[in-house]
Amino acid sequence: MSSNELIGAELEAAGMREIDSAVATSRAAQDALDNNALQQAIRERRAAGDAAPLKLGVLISGSGTNLQAIIDRIADGTLNASVELVVSSRPSAKGLQRAEKAGIQTLTLSKDVYADPLAADEVIAFELLKHQVDYVVMAGYMRMVHAPLLQLFKNRVVNIHPALLPSFQGAHGIQDAYDRGVKVTGVTVHFANEVYDQGPIIAQETVRIEEGMSVDELEANIHAVEHVLYPQVVDLLSAGRVHVDEDNRVQILPE
Image (tube, rainbow, N blue to C red):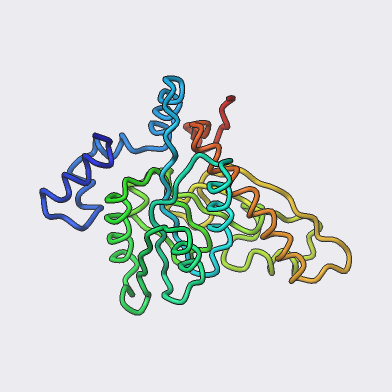
C-alpha cells in the first residue's frame, strides 16, 4: 500500500475530512510524501524496471490550455504521466470540457459555494488523496493554495507563472513586464509554497519582447512557451530528476 493509500485509510477510519488536522496526527506519513522522498522512490522504481506513470491532479480556472498540452503529450506517448483528477474553481471553465473529452474525472468547487479558501483546499486535498495523486499541477488556477494542500503535498504542488520570477510576480505578469518595457521576459515553473510566487524554481524559459510587439502578441508567445515547458517539467518529475536542496534551490539530477 502506498503512502497516499495509508493516509487515505487513516482519514477514513478517523472520520476526518480536514486534511491539515489529519496530517498533524501522522508526522511520519507527512514526511514520507515530501518531493525528495518521492523522487528518490521513483528513481529506485525505474532502476528496478517499474516505469509506472506519474499521477497528476490538475487545478484550473479557465481555458485549460496548459492542461491540454499535458493531455496531448500523454496521448502521443511522450509523457509518462496520467491525469487522475481535474479540479476547477469555476463551473464555466473550458478546461472542464477538455478533461471530460479526455475521459478525466472532474470536480468543481465554485467560489460562490466555497468562499473560504481553506475549506476548499481541505476538500481538494481529500479528493486528491482518494485519487492517489503524486503531484498537484496548477494550470491557470486563480486561487491561492493553503496549508491543507501545501502541508500534505510538500514541494509537490507545481505552478506556472508567465514571467521570469522573481520579477513581475502576481496576477498580471505579462502586462506588467510589457508596461515596464523590459526586452526579455519569460515563463517560470516552480513549486508553490506559503509565499505567493516565491517557491523553489524548477525551470525557466525566456521570451523576447520585440520592437513593435503588442501585448496580445507577447501573451501568445508566452503561452506557446508554457505549453512546451510545463510538460517538460512533468517529464522531469516522472523521471525522478527534481531535487530540492537545503537552501530551497532545485537541482535537476542527471539521467
